[in-house]
Image (cartoon, rainbow, N blue to C red):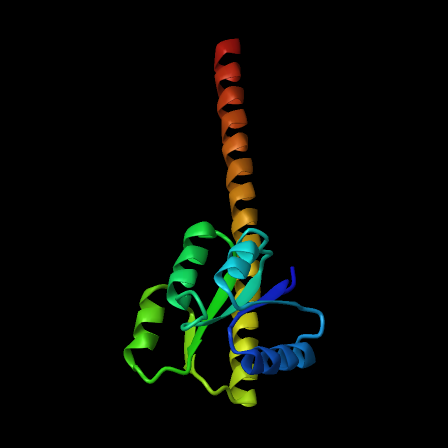
Length: 165
């Protein structure tokens, strides 16, 4: 399973364009979805695909990015995604608020190309490891179920043998 989408929730068109250009260059097979207003974000939240990376600005035009992050976490607790919250604000407590709300990463704007690429590559690596872990967990569950069935068969055979004596 490959990285499916990168969602850019940003109201600054210059930042959105910059991020989209970097993503397009380094992740050519990934679909980019953008939203700048709450109504667009709500539409996106209804049609998400996973695994995904979310880049969420804290101060959106008509929404709070940390509240959007909380909503994503609430609606998709078991899906595989990585959230990066970003802000141009000067309040140092915003990063801590974002991390407490469940963000996987946080950074101050303006974005530097190298920093953005590094963060996105780390996010992709994290997601691919989560996907691999999910596949392995499913295999473990299948083996446990197979083991349970074999145990039942063994017990039935023992009972059948004892009853035949």
